[in-house]
Image 1 (cartoon, rainbow, N blue to C red):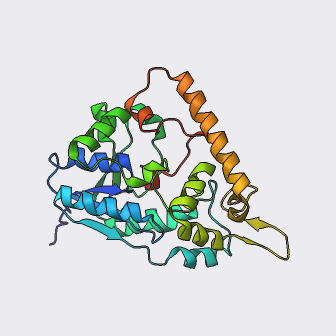
Image 2 (image 1 turned 30 degrees about the horizontal axis):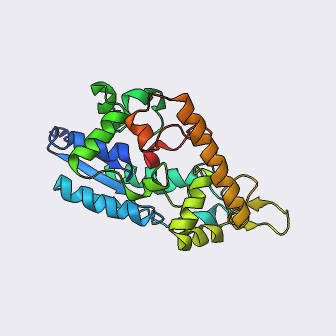
Image 3 (image 1 turned 90 degrees about the vertical axis):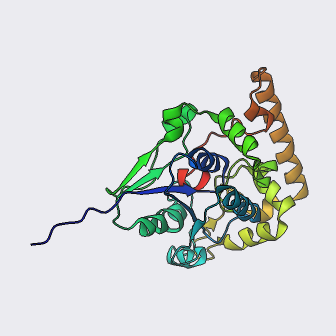
Length: 272
């Protein structure tokens, strides 16, 4: 007669290279000894992201498991016949982030620690639907908000990733959730990656349909000097309006990481 041996529960914290998941790793480091850290590497990340993860790994004193998808982005782009991912389909998140994470977990019972803060509890969203994976939200339970996240990062000595100088979130350098001014930031900080992102755009010569990262505008059009100046001016006006509306600025406002133009419906697994 055989008896089923119950598998031990795994504790896994998935990192995006962003401020919230990094702060959560700092927060949980001494609370759970057997936590596993993972980063789903799409192969299309910013160099600042890799540098930040290396520094975090030293701080944690523990290896971050770097998970690679079974196929690179270009492979899936061919499968989807050149149709770029967008806010509606998000096939990049599913194929390059969620599925590699689920393969890493397998059928083991798992608690997945998610860095959604107490001031954004409404963002509870799709991480994984596998029944053996249970998502928990330590920041919500502890009442930790955005300002607390900044304090955790500063007190640890890690601070913010360098890309926050010109970008509001982590994720692939060509993420379609980027604001126009962030594309300008990519152009100015990593022109080679801007060129690479532009190579993914195309126009169907038969149907005339264009596949671009932004709505109704290609990266070749956006890079025009006059267009860049208009984008910067529009962003400056937006920042001024926000400043006038928030006289009592929080720590996050000082860092320029408050409200995002057009709202924020980004993929949680990529941008936390």
